[in-house]
Image 1: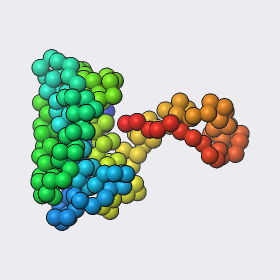
Image 2 (image 1 turned 135 degrees about the vertical axis):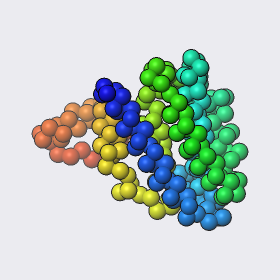
Image 3 (image 1 turned 135 degrees about the horizontal axis):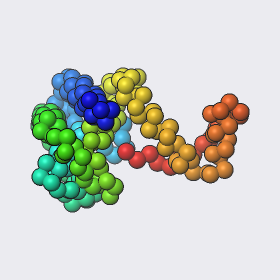
Length: 211
């Protein structure tokens, strides 16, 4: 098995574990859970969970397109369609929201199982307009699940993130760090600290992180 296939297989396995972890959290929720505030400003737990569900469907959409030899947009209707779907589902009863999330776990994992080496080379277009390579999507999905699991504010914390996920995500985040430093003049100070030639920077301003 080549390294690309090994990485893809590991990403799928890791995301399946993340799905199971979130499912365990969902199993302990009561009927009032979805109406509680999440850690994301303006979003309830229902908003976050509905987003997680619709995100899974958006991945299925692109993968189904790849299986049909097509290159599809992640969300029908773009940003507006994405937001409309979240708002429409956020206030549903807890059991409906939870069942929705769990059902989309199964739909996405089924789509992964139906992909072939050729269709994994396909791609779609993200809601932000960038290319989404199919073989990179299982890791992107894991990112959504792990980060939003913490955002729910239901007891799952950053200290609970799996070590393999942290290692992979930290590599990506540090690689993108330089271009996110708002003041280009501060980059030299950051570099000096990283190579042991300066003090740890304070007040460093970064552009917003985009998944």
